[in-house]
Length: 240
Ligand SMILES: [Mg+2]
Image (tube, rainbow, N blue to C red):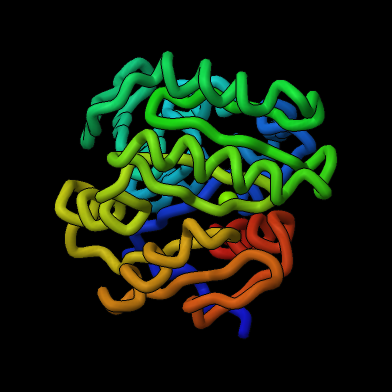
């Protein structure tokens, strides 16, 4: 079902990869168009600043792709918050040795150069998009890492598996933002494309708002759009 028009009093929360931008063959190869930057700026203005990106990427990475995006970002699956460029605060820190985790991940992945190890400040991801037959290998390697890092949890994603802090998620990030100005009291709307987005879908719907699933696949969201271009068109239409 197509989503209704964006309410004037919306608090808008958007995932990034697969939602605002098409997923690229490598995470650093995503393309953020001028049109998307312009759309995000106009939405921020229209909503009185009540627009936040909620991503599994860390804040510094995301700001690097977004240029001068002035808005709010919850990064690393809700472990980090940034209210303006240059500002990054940690919301949730679990005890683990990131350097040791990253180095062990590279060791485990070394036999298969097609695996991309993505070092994250709050975890690590292995991508097998370049050779989907490596899925089982990556699952075994990541299970191995998970067993050594009890404060991290396995997060399946599209053609990737990630270890990220347990105890937070896009839903907790969203709930935290809804207690802050200018989000408080507004109607929450969330769009995302992946399994990691599902808790946030349920969170907005339990708060009287609505969720939009981007693309195929099972979802708790009551609305669906086919791809990032369809989401951009829907957002753009809400501004006219
Ligand atoms: Mg996504």
